[in-house]
Each structure stands twice: as C-alpha cells, then as structure tokens.
Image 1 (tube, rainbow, N blue to C red):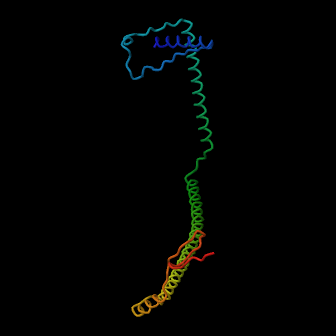
Image 2 (cartoon, rainbow, N blue to C red):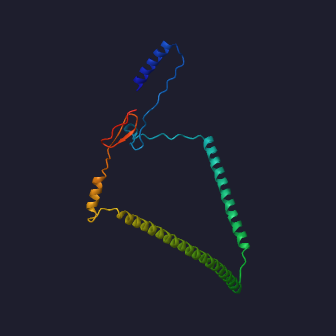
Image 3 (cartoon, rainbow, N blue to C red):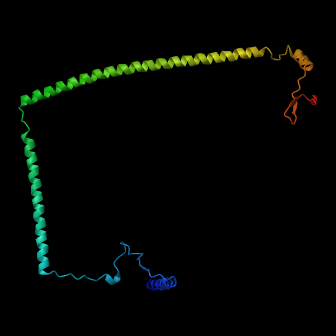
Length: 213
C-alpha cells in the first residue's frame, strides 16, 4: 500500500508540474478494518497493558468529583421520595371514610342512577330499533315493487316478441304454400349483384348497363 501511495504521489506531482498548478491534496484512506469477530492477533495475545499511575492531585480531584456526584444524586433521590410522600398524604387527606350505612346508601344511589341510565338507553334503543324496522320494511317494499315492475317490463317485452314472431310467421314458407312461393320467386327474380364505378355510383344487377353521360 505504501508503494502504491508513493507511485500515486509521484504521478500526481508530475501531472501538477505539467499543468503548472500548485493546488495539490493527497489523502490516504484505510479502506478495510479488522472485523470484530476475529480473535486477538498473536503478537498482542499475551501483552498486558501497563496501568498508568495517577498523581496525588489527580486522585484527589477524581475523588472530589465522585463525592460531589454522589451527594447530588442522594439529594435528588431524597427530593423525589419526599415528593411522593407529600402526594400520598394529600391524596389520602381528601378521602372521607364512610360508615357501612353510608356506603350502603351510596351503593343504592349508584344502583338507582345506573338503573335510570339503563332505562333511558333502553328507551332510546327501542326508538332506534323501531325506526330501523320501518326503514327496512320500506326498503323491502321498494325492492318488491321494483322487482314487480321489472317483471312486468320483461313480460311486456316477451309478449311483443311473441306478437312479432306471430306476425312474421304469416310470411313463412310452409308445406302448403311451397309451390306458390317457388312460382313467385321464379316470376320475380332478385339480383343482389352490384358494381361501383370510379365516380362512386352503384350499379345494381348483373346485366344492368351503366348510363353514359
């Protein structure tokens, strides 16, 4: 890697000399680091790091900071403890202890209030259910009427189709009028051939001659 870096440095220096530029920056990047799951290197396996000795001034300052931190932490704990106790005392001071008779009377009052609420909700529910039933009956009635109307329209279309077929059946060729239909077809030939000239005129019939202008 060092050799490649030196070669890159030499090439960059030559390029800068050719271009006449003095602005040059070279930065080495360590692209690969040792993964955390690899063991300790053999050269560092039995190396014991040397423990640095603290001076008396440094040890005294660290002890002072440690004691200061412990004191502040104890103060905060004591404050929170007193705050919790104060809240418990204020919350229990507002609580009134009732006698069994008073508790029974309070329970009966709650039962009556609950019964009143239940009766009110039951009445509202009955009104709502009755309204829903009426709406459902009206919806079903409307659907039935629409179904009847569709059925009548279907029957009317079927009757019209039947009448049309009956009317068309009068012109059908049957065994009785077969000879007459043949004679009519021979007497009145129909030529379905036609041609179209360059002007777009339709000339019907196989033997029809175009009209000359």
